[in-house]
Length: 484
Ligand code: ZN
Ligand code: CU
Image 1 (cartoon, rainbow, N blue to C red):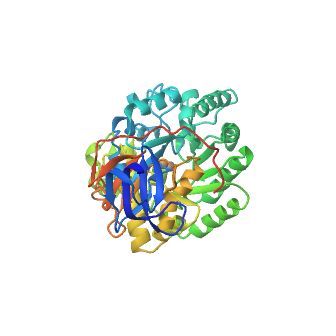
Image 2 (tube, rainbow, N blue to C red):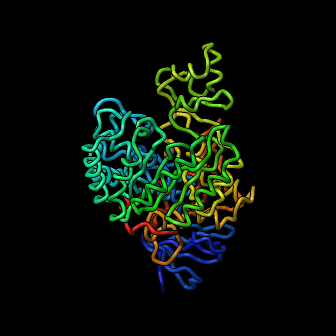
Image 3 (cartoon, rainbow, N blue to C red):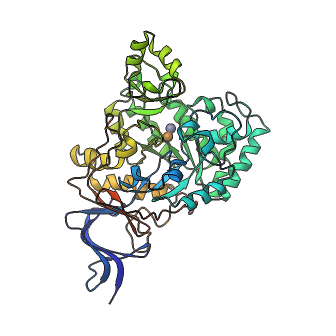
């Protein structure tokens, strides 16, 4: 009689490919998905009744800053509670490795943790630390351009010179050899803004041979967003590598309504090269406090401040009023600080979220004491609010954007689909009840309707709580990233 560890019966399978939901029984055998089908006569140690529930591949959060958080907090509840089973770290040009600090932690590397947490001069050292921490979710990692600049440059407000670029390349190549997925950049940030396009092109050059990828927080997400997209596409074309535009948006009041132009530019690029993007389902962004983004017409909430921690949770306008100064002056006094900017149009965000090439990425900031709710709410918000309640796209399409598409884009083999022989990263949820509960006022509330999460075959989350099992793995770069 065939036997399996866990048998999920009478469940609606949404397999991650975008195909229609199908009724089935699914067997988990050790860390793999066993048979899928009728499975009559199977015996199992655990039988789960899936009636009325959906079984999907575990969600892949393609855009995270969990690099150091997951080592200190391997339970990874902000993500596991959403059904996320894999996180990609090292985005926006900032990665925990390879990093050697001498002096101040450059902005925005301070989003990842305190200076003393950066103790991985080599990528291999980071991989070993992840394996030792045994996080509850799988981890794959990019190498940050700003991190590389930090290692080899005395100051970051200039372009790298011809002797620094080869040194950065050596560290990048070493990291690729040790399993990094590719290179990320954060050209909008002042620590990388002075880098020339040629500097990034030179660094992107070794990616193609390694089958690696280039992801980018664009040089601009505001007025000159189209130029910034062109720059990213040119880097991809020159280096012959796939490009992912991180958290694609058009930000700032003056750019509301420009999603059409942005998507037209994206579609044009897709017709000639391998390009994708990710997006979080909120009309507000969050990062370190950037004086260039201070605008009296939008609401900016301060989430932390080194100089004035007592102001966390207040808006910049309230703080300016209390101090009887302008908002820009208040912002100067708060630095360094973190902020949430309500500067995106809901309609633009929806258009970008709906685009077929768009993956879901939370961009959550786990070290922020008052984080943007995307950290705890992104995936259930897409499933519940945007797909079910608002009808923005079908539930199969929502799941494809968080599973099959990202697995293919980042070359995560045997993940992202429900197929026999694939790793058993699975989430069981109630399609009627699934919803995000984190809000801007209560940002750390766990989502609802996520019934069970398996990571590599281990039941890791159940009844709104971690089971204590932590079965995540470090995922070195595998298959070359491929066109989706
Ligand atoms: Zn970013
Ligand atoms: Cu980011």
